[in-house]
Image 1 (tube, rainbow, N blue to C red):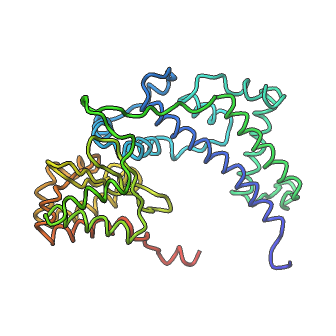
Image 2: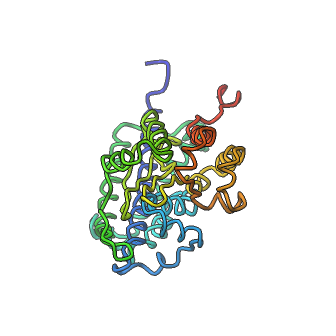
Image 3: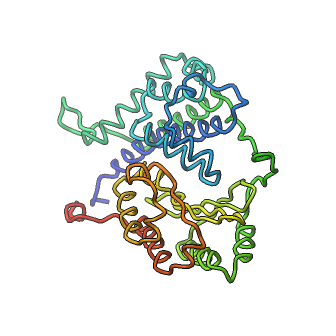
Length: 343
């Protein structure tokens, strides 16, 4: 090959294997914690019940059924997203929020090793990963890089796969998410479909609200967004766009006959990019109809899901255009500075 050291591919695979375990632990934490949050009938770990939440978060989860998952997981990401779950103690602490099991003894039984052997092996793999990522895998005694082969990496990948399977079995199956059957005594659907939303939108045709919802759905379709149905008594859905490489809810529709509205997911947006949330608010406040609906200071609104009545949007083309412009801010790729290009 000559142009590069093939061993660097093995080093990259080692780093990715450990990072994959890290990513999977995060996902298990978020998914299982969300399921526990919805299902109060299950026995839940004491540490889960100790996760601090704001009144704004509780308010958003109670009101916005279509975006409960986004809201709660965004909160968890703000609390745990910066943490690295590669070391045994960190993994044990993360999973203690969703399971009371004695993690490493249970995992060790399934791997037919002792807890000390399992955690020691994981520590060694994580140390080598950090050495590759931060020190170019150099051996300080010789000044040369530590040798690595395809067999070394294959053994790491295989063992980490078995470790993840053992962890999954040790903590047990994920808690079931209970279906919502009624809201205030009214039976609800488990999930509204896109067809349900289109039917409700068609019923508004010829009205200002119908004009607004048609423009909103057209924007979603033009940007390959996906609708995730809510479970309220009236048609509702969270509208998910690709934001920062992941599908996230950007806005929600609530098509009740009395007051159809669109709500913006400022709380989840701010948890990932607070500057973006404030810039979106700045755009919205520049239009009088939208500004009049923003009843709280900006530092409060970024923790909420402010909504706008569809009929008012339909009566004001400028307001509707401004709202879509705020959405486009979230869809714009991040600016690249010269230094990034050079690197």
